[in-house]
Picture 1 (tube, rainbow, N blue to C red):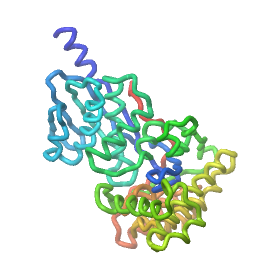
Picture 2 (picture 1 turned 180 degrees about the vertical axis):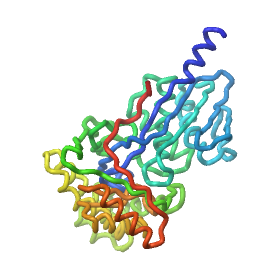
Picture 3 (picture 1 turned 180 degrees about the horizontal axis):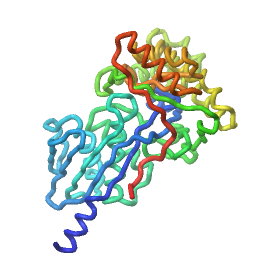
Picture 4 (picture 1 turned 45 degrees about the horizontal axis):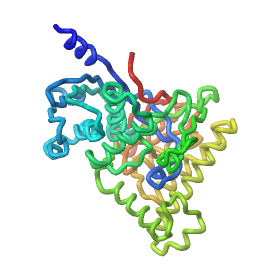
Amino acid sequence: MTSSHAAERELRVEKWIAPGRVNIIGEHTDYNEGFVLPIALSLGVVCAAGPRGDGLVRLTSAQRPGEVVEAKVKDLVAQRERLPGWARYPLGVVDEFVRGGHGIVGVDLELDGAVPIGAGLSSSAALCCAVTIALRDLFAPELTDRDMVEIARAAENGFAGVPTGILDQSASILCTEGHALFLDIRAFTDRESGAAEQIPFDLHAAGLALIVADTGSPHDLADGGYAERRSQCDAAAVALELPALRDAVSEDLVRLRDPLLRCRAKHVITENARVLAVVDQLRAGAVPQGIGALLTASHRSLRDDFEVSAPALDLAVEAALDAGAHGARMVGGGFGGSVIALVDRADLVADNIVNRFATAGFTAPRVFTVEPAAGARRLD
């Protein structure tokens, strides 16, 4: 084996991981240029990657055993329609690097994901970010963390056709262990300093736990509901003659004659205020129990004003609160997915959620505890 072949083989065993995320609060505020407060999960997508010299991307996934996707690096857009849906996320990242002039002749990508798909925990963003950080280290080490967020988001928006904001990608790339990420989306997009702040979030020290209940009711951001909410928010901002709903205040609501747009705007206005209130409490060192009421208020707003909840999500929130949770709410884009709950006794709350689902005839939820984890990185 020549030395060049040996180096190529060595590169192929290198691995990177990007985590999923759960948003403590700040849902549907990112694409309205507002505020968000996510944490990264210990669950992530692992990408093994290495260069090849034949002009091909070769893509495999442990979750798709026996399936191999190959595409020519040049003009990936022309090949998009023949590609399976899951492959469009990583290949979209490759396309962004190629269009950015980063000199990818060919690349092997081997993926293995542990983030539940359709649970509202950003499995797709974790996938895109894992590939992005791998390609950055292999082909474009000059790229910054902010560049990687933008590449991953562009791949998901364009090639995969999912109109997300930058919350998910920012969390996957920027989060740090033991902290929540307070992100001012407008300032971050404009590359202003101070747009991202790490907020200490040590639940264990406070005798608390944060549980996630994956309801098993999958959501799909590529369908019409998410895009429709974005369009409604844009329409509300236009009607108010504002750059984005981030600039709206409660007094503006009376100027919206369309009751539907009024409800959508009300959620964004009040959700931004809730994010700032949570951050102020945590930054001041207040006991985290105090944010529970704000989490529950967020769920009611998402359910009633933004109308993105679902029966399984509402039941999980109700069951958590009945079992003594300090607060609970749906997370993610909505229409299915997961709920978070801030609790003293994770076992009691989890048991009540599972029992209530059984009584209602719903699929048994997967309930687990999460802690703030590190963002995307190379694995040793």
